[in-house]
Image (cartoon, rainbow, N blue to C red; front, side, top):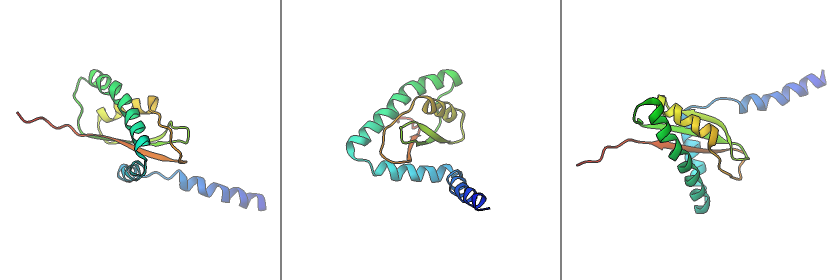
Length: 127
């Protein structure tokens, strides 16, 4: 009986940790984590995001035969810097971009969990 109770108690934190959050909540966590970075870490984060964007944008434009629309992609990174979980706004382009983030984004940090966001807004230049 003691073993069963202990086993059940050990499962409780896992179920709480596995609880899903909304894209908006993930964006807020990303903003908090990104704002806490020192300037050299922020530079490294932006460089890692730019590396993914440089390949993702042309690939997704070609695959979808469409220009990107406004989107947000939030990633939760594991301690080794790889994508653990991902939240995506509702568009085909965002999903395509998220696939690139999932497969090739890496950012080393010192937190157990680190959230970061990539947001794109399409604005036409005025003539």
